[in-house]
Length: 145
Image 1 (cartoon, one colour):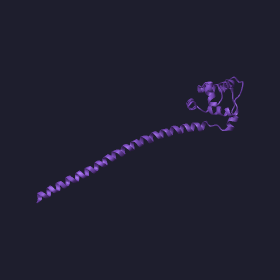
Image 2 (cartoon, rainbow, N blue to C red):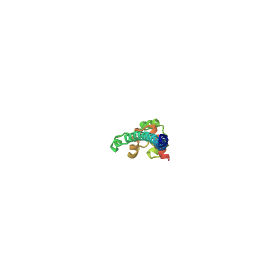
Image 3 (tube, rainbow, N blue to C red):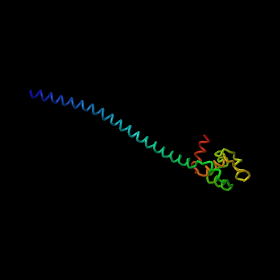
Image 4 (cartoon, rainbow, N blue to C red):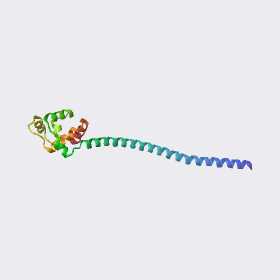
């Protein structure tokens, strides 16, 4: 009788191991899938954080570049200062005219000292003074689209 009991015991152990193995395989597969999804989410989070950081930098620059109307009224317009600004930003008269909403001929008239910008354009000029080449290029690309 001991022989049948040991055979039965061995068979039960074998079947139990088989069942446990099949259950653990399912868990291993789902665990691996979850780990893959977690890695993908971490990558996406890192990329979104980088984008947010870039946008915050851009936003802080643009808010710093915003000009209050009373500051623009106090601002002085000089021909040499405007020429220097245009050269520093590396812009053509056409490009700076597009930024300010005027024609290239108007820019040439300002630089020649024949005319002066209106208050509306003066505010924009003051705003341009606080910008760099990259920001201006980005704005021009947006305008081109």
